[in-house]
Image 1 (cartoon, rainbow, N blue to C red):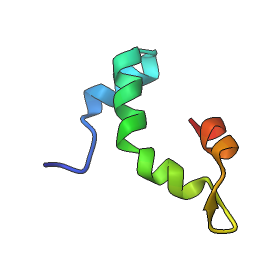
Image 2 (cartoon, rainbow, N blue to C red; image 1 turned 120 degrees about the horizontal axis):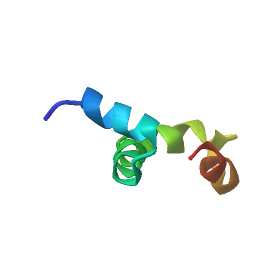
Image 3 (cartoon, helix red, strand yellow; image 1 turned 135 degrees about the vertical axis):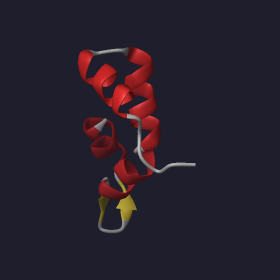
Image 4 (cartoon, one colour; image 1 turned 60 degrees about the horizontal axis):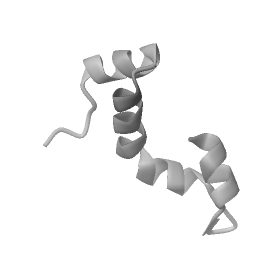
Length: 51
């Protein structure tokens, strides 16, 4: 399985396709969660803002 999203999915997400946006958010969910940490704990408010 490839770790990269297909280019077409990224283009569709950029154009506003809801399914493509969900795919991108699911793909990067772990990274978003990691970036949402404040003092080592996940901050749900920041996580939702980033999404």
